[in-house]
Image (cartoon, rainbow, N blue to C red; front, side, top):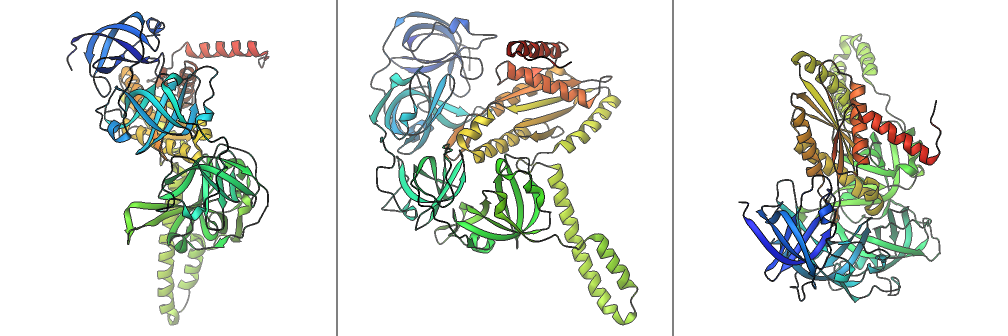
Amino acid sequence: MRALPVHLRGVITYFDPDFGSGQPAIFIHDDTGDIFIQMICKQTCKAADPLFVGALVDVWGVSAPGGYGPVVGSPQIRILGRAPLPSNPPRVNLANLRTGDEDAQWVEVEGSVHRVIEYANSVTLRLELADGPIDVTMIRTPGATYSNLVDAQVRIRANAAPTTNSNGQMIGVHLQSPNLSALQVVEPAPSDPFAHPANPIDRLLHWGVLSTPFHRIHMRGNVTLQWPGSLLCIRDATRGICAETSQATPVAVGDLVDLAGFVETENGVPVVTNAVFRSIGNQRPFAPKSVTAEKILGGGFNSELVQIDGQLIGYDLTSSDAILQLSSGDTLFPAILPKSFAGSDIRAWKVGSKLRITGICSVNIDVQNNVRAGVAVTKSFRVLMSSPADVTLLEGPSWWTPSHALILLGLALTGTLLVLIWVVILRRRIELQADQLRESEQRFRHLAEHDTLTGLASRLVLEDRMKDAMESARRHRNGLALLMVDLDEFKEINDTYGHQAGDEVLRVTAERLLEAVRASDTVVRLGGDEFVVLLPEIRDPNAVELVASTLVSSLSQPVRFAGNELPVSVSVGIGTAFPGEMDAKVLLRHADAALYRAKDRGRHCFQVFTAGLNESLREKERERNDAEGVIPKA
């Protein structure tokens, strides 16, 4: 787009001095419509400080393409006074917004508030419109209470804004509303979410009874599983269901509870989101249903308390939960337990053991490609456990090993010709067993060298790759770089949306990392929300900064999970090494120190390690210790 001179006069409908990248977000409106003002600041935007919603301004600038639609770039803004916000904006729905025709425009939507996420300077409302959910972000009003908006019917006026990927392609839409002054409560939330009669769980989402509701639904049942602050599963006389909840009030298995939340679908099955609950006593124990993998895949066991036998084939202890990988017949399935419940007992079971697992069955239904007679078919499942006591050892690992097989083969070869037929049969059986053992060894080797959740390489692979890269750098007289990538505020995602959402953010981040780097580069998950990118054969340090800038941009895109747009941003620390200074441990320390500095600068940025950075960080540490009265170690 040509940079043509632009002169506009209008009223500011949205102003955020820092919308996450250190730059302000500004929309203005005149009689012809609305447009985004792209103000890029080298350090801070002090010139934008006097701006406010409702300011009448003159804007001089140039036309620019923006991230999706046209914007005004290189602006100079002068405040003329105050003006009212536009009245009678067009009422739109999600379908209108997804066309992109309303990009940047001042619009009005009406819907039910399903979730409130509060940040330091802003608030995001998840609004359920008649045709789907949308996120509305507004500047936080000091002292205002937002939690009472959950389940209220509201009208909100805001500027439409696209959600784009790093290629400038529109992949979603959200709204940016100035503050609570642009929100009208049409119908307040019920004072008691449990006031209406409880609905039978088996009638949820049935035609003629309940479609996906705008408002909370009341259910009553006995507790079958609780992960405090994350998940609560109940069962009434008809069926079971699981609810995502941030409420951590402890309840016991069998307790009768009232549960109220929004009924949605996830992986093809009904779930309850943003739920609240209260205990009404009456503890009643449940007996689990004894099932097989074949029965579960046949349908009818989602959110039910089940008992299933399987052979342990491996562990995954790198994610936020402890995961046992089991096989039952030809079916593989995971049994999941939060690490805070697992303790050290999780390693008590040896690979190859036969285990009996008790827990809640959570199924994944293929609603796209696997439909039989109009009914979606169960594709896979997992079992959610509440404690290590939900695992019973039935049988230890098989005695059969390659060395034992060779002993038996040696004994067989010493036999007489009279048993030749038996030897041939035995050899064939040994060959089959050896094939199975090789496949198992390859599978276990892959599990050891790769992160089960994301599929990325492990720390062991990183050490080998760094040795190879340093040897190559010495031979070819070039350098290498190490980028340490850390998700910002990842704990808030787990605390707000649950560990399943956190796992999805980790998986998507891993995919985006692999897409953003070269095939010759190595991407590793160190653990938790920390990743490392090894860039070999570096000749120009500026190229490393370009890669880091690309990662900050491409990874800082929302992740969609269970109908939510999860806010994501990353910080990156850069360590580089050139011939004569090749030391893997030093390179890791440099990248980690740079990451620490990037976090200290406010996150969502990258930092290159410099010689003075260690001393700067040590000075900050001394200042922090002095402020806290900490005596440094001798």
